[in-house]
Image (cartoon, rainbow over all chains, first blue to last red; front, top):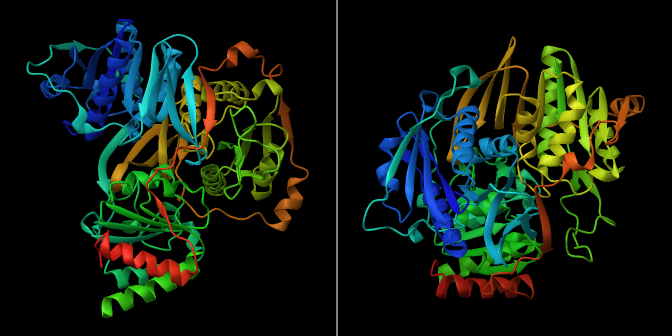
Amino acid sequence: MPNEILVFAEQQDGKITRPTWEAVAAGQRIAGDTGATVSIVVLGRKSSALAPELASADVAGVLAAESSVLAEYTPDGYALAMGEVIRSRQPQYVVFSHTYQVRDFAPKLAAALGAGFISDCLSYRKRDTKLVFVRQVFQGKFNADVEFTGNPPYLVSFQAGSFREDSVKRASTAAPITTTSIEIAPDKIRARPGERFREAKQAVDLTQAEIIVAVGRGIRAPENVDLARKLAEALGGEIGASRPICDGGWLPMDRQIGSSGQTVAPKLYVALGISGAIQHQVGMKGSRSVLAINKDREAPIFEVATYGVVGDLFEVVPALIEEIQKAKSR
Amino acid sequence: MKIIVCLKQVPARDSLLRLNTEGTWIKETDISFEVNEPDIYALEEALRLKESQGGEVVVCSLGPARAQQAIKEALAKGADYALHLDDPAFAGLDSYGMARAMAKALEAEKPDLIVTGLQSDDFGAAQTGVILAELMGLPHATIIMRIEVHGGAIKVKRELEAGWFQWIEMPLPALLTIQSGINKPRYATLKGIMGAKTKPIRKLTIAELGLSGGDLAPRQKISRVYVPEKRANTEFFEGSSKEIAVKLVNKLKNEARVL
């Protein structure tokens, strides 16, 4: 249906994931702006079991596409199944959340369909009859307006948090559910996925911390992490870090904040020498107050900062520790 | 094992980027470029596989003349030879166009494994590697944190969100996108830098790939690049370190209420 928006629903162990609802919210918004209808598609061996939950959204329908090869996620299986669904329905837009799973198969799907895929968008704008998608480039230093050329279907994924789960419009009556079985020969699936697992148990749970002092590349050397640790102690908080710091072994992996680490929401988040790339912001933008100290005024971290200091953290932090201690002793 | 590493040259991390006059991309003059960081990890992984399994490492890079610098750096670290896709027609390609050109260049190489970084630090679509796999008919996995070779197959550790991982097995040939932090990348040695001078770099134009501009036609285009609107309520503090500290403590105490 040329006037249809198809939303991809992601599931994990038989549960609809949170980013799915953000994609539904995005799909509903786009539909409202383009006069289209929204349908949700969910894949799996028995994905019809998940359809009723999705059908609570205010959508035209839920499509449960089933195949025995979809019991576990594989890029081959998902790209083939979604390709089949898209070819038969011919939607205008296919909307995804920019999750690790979507990153894994959606470019393949787009290439197989000969379709365009604008990934990791923040928002969109309507210009005449077209939609222009906004995404970050150069690690968040700039935004870019990107538009599709050529013919639909157009595939688009939105960054986590771009649309709110709680803005999903619900309907009083459940949307109709269609179950369809998709023929995929088992030998088309070339990868064999194993069980999901976590490394050694997360020793530190930063998600419950009220105050976090996080360090990034701007800390320059492993011995300087002590300075951040002292600030954390003065504030009575935990220490965290951006990915490069943990990759370098300057702090253990369980201190990592961001898309591949922990997602935190403390009362105060202090970002020391963290530029604030998208992957980091995803993990901390729910913080109530953010203090960013960075020498680069253009650093994206300042976009989410409540308080900003453009300057040398090696001068500001010692002074700050001293003043905090004074304030506490009063 | 013949391993291809696809790497891209991007503006150096510390460059002060400015927009071009049309506001459609950055001004590429007056800034320095470096190898895209995740691609450095991909190269290191390829070199380690060569050391443990034998074989050769081939660099493939699409970009203007300046990309030679990135290629030479890879050769100096131990890659054996390079393909440099360089043609004015390659300017401004989207992920699909880049992947299409590279697929054409790499078919004849008959690689066992292709590795590349999970995304580039410039446009950052995180698509080129996956599209390349599709166009070459190869299985793939993304955001990889470990590679084990078992005969004609590999077992890889794929990173998932929030600290989760998954092992995946697949037959070779295959394509992997590599996550930063998978290894500790080496530096080029002086001997390596000297040795790189005699290593072949094969330049490939669009005509030599047997492609036309239409084959690489973008499916998306950037209409505008601009500085994002700053969140209006960021309050900046200036002055001496002591003055800043005093003001901050006041805010932390009375507004953020954490002291």
